[in-house]
Length: 193
Image (tube, rainbow, N blue to C red):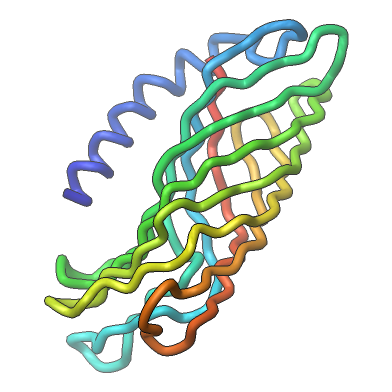
């Protein structure tokens, strides 16, 4: 399933990037444009691990993940400001084999952007729905409460850097601890059509 998701995202990006780059009016005041963002994030507390085949351990961290979100961007009339409302999936995994632990959640982002030419500065909120840790093998899943965090981002043309501050609290049995820092620093690509 993960390979299919990655392949689908790659195909969509190969098609979408030229279209987004050719569309210069993505931030024109008084318009509503679709926005697609995909990226990788790093950070957070250690959630789970596995023993590597050739010595050492591989760890799954609460923030290490790949994500894709999609939604409308509302560009305010007579203003450099925009409001972006997006939802999608964020999936954390260890790059080793199929039975590795995974940590999946469904982010809903609401961001205000200040646009100045090719530069876009943003801040807002990210609400993560149904965070779930699936450990290695056939062990039980661990669920976490929905979590609310803050976001800061800076973007030049279609590429950006993003900081998210968020914490996850276990809603049942705790795998190791009951509260995990999921704060991340990430790199992303944002396409406005």
